[in-house]
Length: 315
Image (cartoon, rainbow, N blue to C red):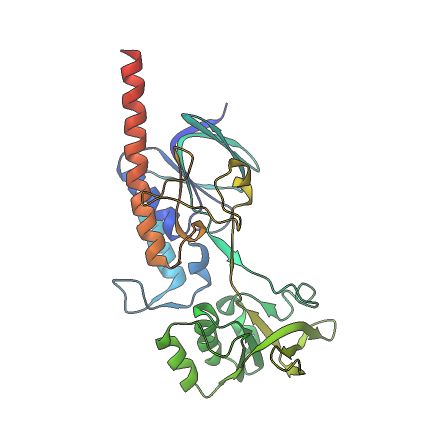
């Protein structure tokens, strides 16, 4: 028989952990499922400077503090990969790679993952110079030359992090200006170790069969090709929602994001979505935490109403 909870939170990033905290503090039984370590992308972030209460905090440290709070009122952490959700009305059946769990309500907090370039050599040299996490892999390139592909917050923040370790960072961006916050841009432009190649796309990752040796670049204005020598290629070109297990529910849009209302409710009663998996403009730790708090409160209201209606039917 499937184990039963009031609430199952799928994902243990900042949003999921906050939802678990609020729901369990409301005296609901809560299981928080994740296929990796709690904290999500915070574990891949060296310094976080825009989370209230901290001038600066290491990502893994903030993840640990959030996790300690999330289980403080009885929420259980369950390791596993969710494969599907079946909507049975007042009960949702969550199927994982090893078990089945029933819940009255589900909070989807699976987040997003880094988009791949999809060019020759990217997959071949994964772990051999191609990386999507400067904090994880930057130390392997101490005093070497690397490239960073992208122009958003993540790309520039990680370029600044790498500049403290490597010999040089070359940022390759497909546009003629960055999309990162201005304060981050200013730091990058002032850093003598960071160079920029504008209006250009990486079309191939080059290597010697064992490790990356550079990237082939094409200027999208002139079609001119060039090679940038580098020992590492760090790629930050966007995010993809991690929603494949929920496609059959019909709650995702054409791009895979999950639209919700202001109460974090999806189109199916009892199923909520929060954080980076939602269709929204700003994806930050603070917004995920805000979503989680709202979802935790709304889950409590939803279950209270569910129980009230059941009591009325039995009376």
